[in-house]
Image 1 (cartoon, rainbow, N blue to C red):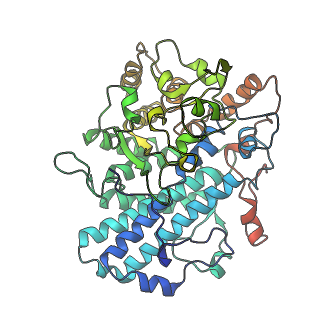
Image 2 (spheres, rainbow, N blue to C red):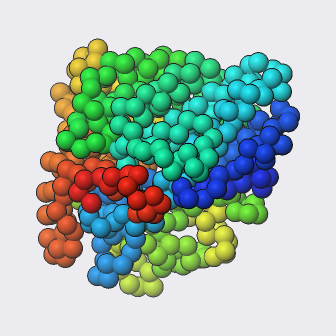
Image 3 (tube, rainbow, N blue to C red):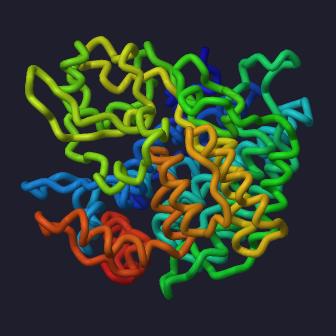
Length: 505
């Protein structure tokens, strides 16, 4: 059963917003004619969630592929992901970057429309609790999209209302600190106003399960504080060198002590197709299969080799040349049960050994779509934040000076290691914590952000390139400017001189 579905509504107000700055946004007239009932406002908020649909694929393309988890080069050098993986400085025209910019700003626009109408016509929603919740959801999602953008691109245009094209074309990029001010303001309101849970009293899912909750906002706000506290690299990126680890730790501790979540006893249970909304999940992107148009999850199929899928008697669904880095595979020590539930391969097909390895964390071989037309129709939600992440983020805060001791850090790490079938350790350092996070969250889209936030990207990526690319020598030199991406060229071209391209590109 799915609830907050990823649905692109066909009504005009919830239709396609501007994909580029030179396209006309939704008119004020259509806005006025749409929001006339309580259900219209609910649909308006649901439409903001719809722009989460591309998030799983985006973190694969821009985080996992950018990081040391994947080695995504080929002999041809023509795939869109290769410039991302290989640190080319000529990727401003890359479609993955345009997708991130367009989808996130589309979500921001939809949030602005709803917030604007709640301000002017919110009394249509008679229930003040529902009205406040809808406002909080819109603010949470606007903050989510802006945070996604600031981690990819750094400085951004701040658009906090439904702006016309003539206005947008005169809004320059604002400093990262100003973008964060909007994000934090939105999340402060969200954490105080969202519902604590959408489960019923018996702990069962309801029609609203899947919406952002109070603890989802707290978790995201904690991650914002942690990211702001990361190093600047002398680049106008997401790190501001602030010391907000204690603020983050306080929020994370509130999530832990809420007792709404728990550490699942086995790793594989977290990602089972029949175990969505389990006690690990704090926030996820919801999908449903078997619908027209397709509303299933695209993410699981992206890295699956075609011959393996065919061998499993499934339709052709993959064909990616983005194998798991052998460096990651060797990091899993003997007895680590996460390995078998995270990475598959090499494998044998028709007597031939295929040396490719790929992420299998979100794959259930018994749930392959039946036809090639349905290859992107997977019935599995994508977890954005889970309880284990909260525990290890709190450990990270303590290692960076937040209240707490080494025993607490070691305790959280050993809880994770015990579930993985590993022996306990002690005296965990930041580098060791990040190594543990790499194994725990491989394929979940966190690795690149972890490297940047921790300051380890400049010490880990250059030697990794030298090691894994020693034979092909197709990857370029890593530079600190590459902690963020270039502004998409299409946005640079809309109005020449409005934006200045990020340094290094």
